[in-house]
Image (cartoon, rainbow, N blue to C red; front, side):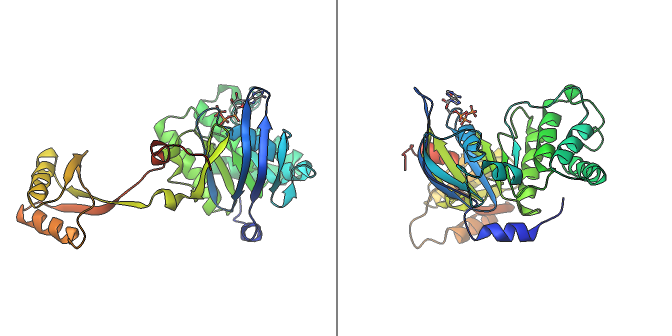
Length: 320
Ligand SMILES: Nc1ncnc2c1ncn2[C@@H]1O[C@H](COP(=O)(O)OP(=O)(O)OP(=O)(O)O)[C@@H](O)[C@H]1O
C-alpha cells in the first residue's frame, strides 16, 4: 500500500460523509432516526450498543439498503444515484464471517484484486503487500476455513484494502478477538488512517477501545445521534489530578494521608492517588512535589485526570 496524500488532500475540504434526516424504518423497529451528521477525513469511531443502528448506517452508505427517508453523500456522491461508484471506491469489512472456507488467503485476496481491475501480476504483488501489512504473510497459503477468528478478521481487513480504496468502512473489526489481537487490530486501523491517509469509519460497541485510535467519535443510541465530536472533546480534563509514586499501596497511602492532612480531598485509585479539583489559588503541583520530597518518596507522575468516552453514557443519554 502506498501513502496517497493526494487522495486524502482531496477529501479534507468537504466532509467525507454527510447525512441529512436519514431514517431507516423496518416496520416495528426504527433502526435510524432522523440522523444528520458530517464525518471528516481521519479515523472516525461509530459507537453504540448492539442494535444502535451502526451496521444499518454503513449498509445505507454503501447503497446496499435504501433509507425510508433522508439523504446522504459519500465522497461527494449521492447514495440514491451513485451507489455503484461509491462501492467502487470504498473498502468494506463486514461484521460477520464472509470468507470462502476452501481457498487460501492469497488466492482470495488476489481474486478480489483482479475483480477490482488489476492485471494478474499487479494483483499478486498487491495482495502480498496487503497480507503482509495485516500480519498474514506466513499463513497466506493456508485455507481460510482453518483460520482462527483473529486471522479471519485480518483476512477480511485485507480484502477491504486490496483495491486501494479512498475510504474504508470497518464493521466491528475487533469482534471476537483476545486482548492482544484487539490491540494489534486497533493499531492497524490507526495506521490505515494516519500512515496511509485513508479516511476510516470504524464501528464498535466498546467506547473505550476507540478513544485511543479515533480523531472523531459519533455515538448512536437506539438509532438516535447521541453525540458527534472530536475525540479530544470527550477527553477534556476534569480538573482532578492523578499522582503516582514509586512503590506499592503503602507508599500511595502515605502520600494520600499527607495530602489529606494538608487540606486536599483525595483517595486511592489503583496505584494512584486522585486529588479532587483544589481550591482556587492553591499551587497543588508544588504542594504534591513538596509533600513527596518531605516523605522521601519518588514521584513518577502528576497528570490531569481525563474523562473517558464511557462518561458520555454515565452522564446520561440525551438525544441531539
Ligand atoms: N433487515 C432487518 N429487518 C428488521 N430489523 C432489522 C434489520 N436489520 C437490522 N434490524 C434492526 O435494526 C436495529 C439496528 O440494527 P443494526 O444491525 O444496524 O445495529 P448495530 O448497531 O450494528 O448492532 P450490532 O452491533 O448488534 O450489529 C436492531 O434493532 C436490529 O434488530
